[in-house]
Amino acid sequence: MRVLVAGGTGMIGHRFAELLLARESTSGIDAVRIAGRNRDAAADLVDAGAEFVAGDLTDPDFARSATEGMNAVVHAAGRSGLGGPLRLYQVNIDITAALLDAARRAGAGRFVHIGSPSMYFDRTNRLDRAEDYRPERLPDGYTQSKAAADRMVLDANSADFTTISLRPRFVTGRGDNYLLTRFIALRRAGILRRIGRGGNLADFTAASNQADAMLLALKAPDAACGEAYNITNGAPVELWRFLDEVMVRIGLKPIRRSIPYPLAAFNGLVMEGLFAFSNRAPGLSRLSAQVLSSSMTLSIEKARARLGYAPRQSNAGMLEEFARWYQASRRRTPGLRPR
Image (cartoon, rainbow, N blue to C red; front, side, top):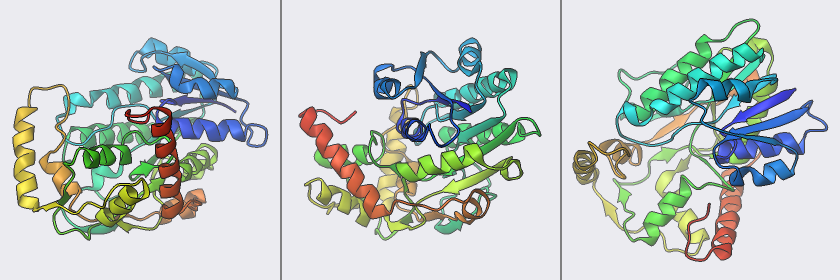
């Protein structure tokens, strides 16, 4: 099987490409191609035997050239965020449309998409969300873009072009420049506050577990396709207690100061107004205040039953992996954020 990993320079795509290259001799993977913008970020993958193609995946011509000769496409590209209008995240829809069209033209038989469980969030405390849950309205532009892309992928499923969408929650581990690294940066700046009373539950997903799920989706029987699957470590944690563990593990003090949710939401409203005409999302929004003070966990029973998914790395192992990587990165580049 010849596999294109679109977005292979981001953490999720990069970790999956590593897995494919490590198992190349035993997994039936004949070739791995990485599509992205930053060649330097894929240098280790190229050294391990991957091919790298640079370009803009919203460009249909580039998408077609990137998928040419591929048997499968794994789509981990796009823009992440929390808050802001759809125009900030339209790229998620455009890339998905271009890759779907290109993959079908290339005769690829399998398309795996990395979706988002953000579409389940309804500003309430709910546990064990299943894949079929939908709130009455989607909370922000990022969620709207991911829900649209997810629907496009699942609607494209057919007898000769099978598709799967995976929805991982809070992916972290080695290479995480987006999630825990941002909380740490806020903590170092002295501006991170616990929102609300604490005690709210959340799921995390180890990057290694997510990579396992992607390989399972790549090789899943056709009968399991045309479906979305939640992916987590299967062990919810108290969000703010876990973040305290992160801070302590890298040598910082726990997060002791807090802010009531109503005040955080008001501050978020002010920030939304300041960023209304900007080309980026506000650092704090009403939505982020709600997400960080509410409980939401996911059921992974469908992935267990139909994909054979079984999380191998625990929350503790995930945190240990992240902390080792983060500290080593800071030693290599003192004063700079790990990249």
